[in-house]
Picture 1: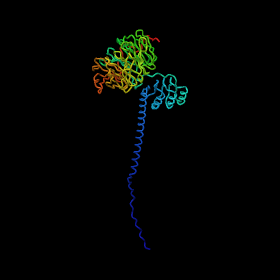
Picture 2 (picture 1 turned 180 degrees about the vertical axis):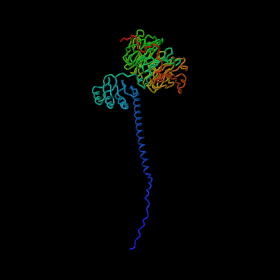
Picture 3 (picture 1 turned 120 degrees about the vertical axis):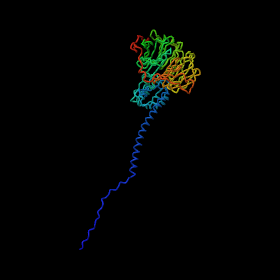
Picture 4 (picture 1 turned 90 degrees about the vertical axis):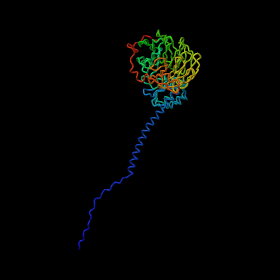
Length: 509
């Protein structure tokens, strides 16, 4: 059998790996996944900041509406509202019901005070939603024990108290405050020295001719609210957050006497035209008259039902006007303490008060964003000046009585006093605490007259006369003091005790 030749097997090449084909769908999926991750992260970030912005917006709106309604807001060191104080018959069930939603939008609110309001049990029922409150004061309202008991059951984590809460300071002190916030500013009778009382209890002095800072005096433990210089220029009177009235020798700045009697913060002091009597007022709702030489209280004027942030003595020294947070201004006879007029018309707490140079007019300011002019003889309101867009804290007449300056949360407004026409507005800073007209003389190289304005941010600015002729042009500002600058000021003259030595001068009760 013939051999069959073997089939020749051709050698095969090793299999080559197939090249991977580029798959578009994989890249698409990767990019889509990346995009989804980025969108998710951005959505989360924007959502977070969006929520924060919205919460902050609601909080700001709540504060604005509460202040508009007449509430006093107490803030912590970060400017957050921790306490809301509602006092007076303007607060009733309907008003409280409208305010509850705003109270809910204050995340840091811990205390609510209802003091002498027209709120009934029906109004208390609206507060059942305020579960974050730690303390709730219900003092002398129109509620019953049953209504308060239901409120306590609805708010088990809140202390419901029927006692009177601690009084609050003026609304100016509730605004955003710096350590050297200026509560009051005055110019000495000779126009040579400017004094400013600050939140840390210090009083600062400047030479107005040169703008040189003279010294800083530790006048009170906290809040130097009241300032006044005697007509003869020998004494400086101060009132503070430590309930004290103090007299200082202006030459040596040594403490001459301490007048004790006020039971709460002293917000205002003023000498009469002779300098023999000093008047003071504050959160204890009284105006007190002191004999300067005898260092004793000789008269006490009572009648206001809320703190008194400001007083003004008439040019002839016969009467004194007191502005109160009970929405009234009272004019008193200094000699016998009798009430001459009770001025009603402001729709918010009254804060500033000033007599015209001739004593015929009285200017008052209020949280209702207006300035009013009153006929002193009749007690009638002659003009209502509307132009501010925020609370008005202070007011002053020019030496000739032709101009009127007012300051508040929105800056300084200048008025033509006779017709009561708004002339111009300027905002050297928000929350203007005091305004003063400066008499002719050198002032930082700028010829006066002009207006000096102090603010709660610790600054003092000068508004020269230039620019008053045009409403459209704001005057040039010259800053004397900026926040924190006072810490570098020199101390008072050598030997000043700064409150360590006090004359034996207890007031009569």
